[in-house]
Structures are given as C-alpha cells and as structure tokens.
Image 1: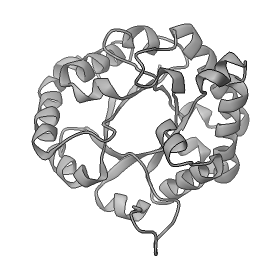
Image 2: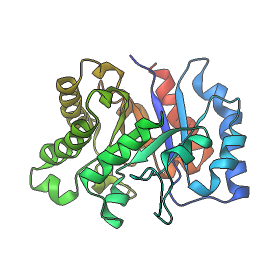
Image 3: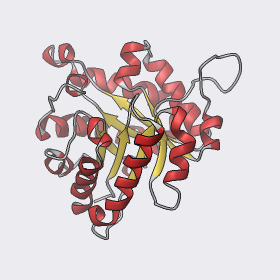
Image 4: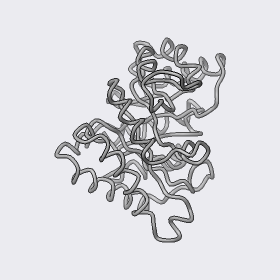
Length: 254
C-alpha cells in the first residue's frame, strides 16, 4: 500500500498568530501521529501566508501547498499568482479546480486543465479536484461528471498526467457535515482509478484523495478503502489535534 497523502486546505482562514500556533501544534504531535512511519503531509495555505508557513515548516518534512495557481504564465492579470511565483516559496502542491473555485469563480474544466498544466510546468504537483453536486448525484450523473472533469485534465496534460494528484470531493459533502460513506467514496475512486489506468501506464504513481468532510472520526474507515490514498482536509486541518488524528489513521495503514 502506498504512503497516504494528508493535505490540509486552510481555505480563507488564518492569521500570523493563529498560523504559528497551528503549525507548532502539528509539528509537536507529528512524530507520535506517524508512529515512526512515513507519510506525506502538506499544508495548503492562503497565498498571503506562504512565506510564513514556508519558514515555520522548514526541516519538518511538512510540504507547503497553494490553494490555486494562475492559468497564465505572467503579465497583466491583476490578482493572479503564477506557478513560477509559487515555486519561489518552495510550494510543492497546488490545488486546482476546487469546487468553491468552480462555483464562485466560474472555473471551467478547460481552465482547471490549464492550471494543472501551469503547475506541472513549474515542477509543482497539482491536486486536481473533481466532484458532483447533490443534484448530479440524485440524477445518477456522478460518474459522468467526475469522468468529464478528469478527462479535460488528461487531454490537456497528456503523458504528464502521471505526475498529478486527484482529489474526489463530493460537493454535497463539503463543509456540510455530511460525508460520503466509505462505500460511496470507494465506488467513485474506483471509477477514477480505472480512468487513469486507461490514460497512462504509470497510474500507480497517482494518489487519489478523498475530500468531503474527512475528520478524526471517519478518517480510518475512509482511508482503509483500497482506492483512497489520502485526504484533502478542510475544517479538520484547522485544529492540530484533529489533523494529527487523521495523520495517525493514515500512517496506521501504511
């Protein structure tokens, strides 16, 4: 079984003081949570705090991630942050296509695919988010939607697709307290795994994370599923004890 990747997405939360306390809390409990085993851990933080968090995690093994990246290389795109800029801050991961970006910023599948391409070109691993709304699920369109979203990224990035991370985030389970059952999550992960296998002979390199309200209470059951390789953690990543508990659940399965 591959190492689990546990990535925290702080969303638009944090302050200089709160960030320092949170990162220190995670660092203090890291060794115990991992139980001597290795796991991949990342913190995807607001762009304003990349420099601070880069310094706070130095030497800890925790990677830094961004919550977005521009589809443009450089130029007159006010407010955008390029992959090259992120690379200056030792960013290892960049979330692209999060449902909140798709919903509130009207990001299309094509835009998400370009953002993944920009990240890859800078040596940054894109965490490509896919997922269906409640209306999609109730209409029986879950598989159709997630396969369409992932297909755009595969088509644009070709052989580089083996360098991405995928995160399945059922939109109806994000920040709602509702969570897909382990069986529901595994069913979609299996669909995504098959799609990736058809696209590249190196699909075994690709981690598929679950990103729909994973928390300390349900992490062990979700992470035990054969095609769930880790978690993209929202609210629980803002509490050191909860984030550490999820890490512990992941490392126990390594």
